[in-house]
Image 1 (cartoon, rainbow, N blue to C red):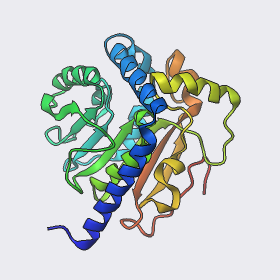
Image 2 (cartoon, rainbow, N blue to C red):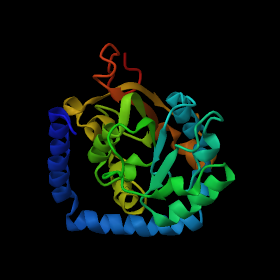
Image 3 (cartoon, rainbow, N blue to C red):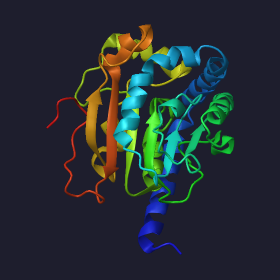
Length: 265
């Protein structure tokens, strides 16, 4: 049976979901999402792995920050073609590892990689980050690997991630993000028109995605990946990518929260 507090939180999420759906169901958002889906179908079988391979150092850094223990249950949200599997630590529990993506074509590729790394194929599946098919407090470590910027409603996705996070767990985000108080250039704004229709929104800010003061989560680590990526594409774009760690405020009340910007004290 749910406690009154659990029921209250669930009702708040349902209400939030309904309100956010009204916003995201606009014709513009639907067209953008449809075009993004088509682009991912093409990417999955062609250039995706080659295009994204240079981001491996960022993936490894994000997974390092997760500090995975053998008993941890790990969730990868928006796993894509399974490029994170080769970066996972050897001590990870592969039976409880779950990985999903909204693109069926990406999931087909991830299933093939899962088999290579001894991960049960059925642990990779099609899913929606905004409405996860899990019970509350299910996972110890959660990773968004270059995926949060592709979710139509990132605030709802983070709310869902918090819902399925075990007490004392952590959420790690590896993504292109705009820092707090940063000014978005006209060139980046213009580029985002095309980016949103092909792979992701490149102008999102983590504080805004969390809901700022209203979020039960807080940022405890935030770093740049500038000069840490490899390859022609990732090497040039590393300046725009960040790795962040989120925890529940109530789980770590003595741990200071930091803003979503670099060199924050």
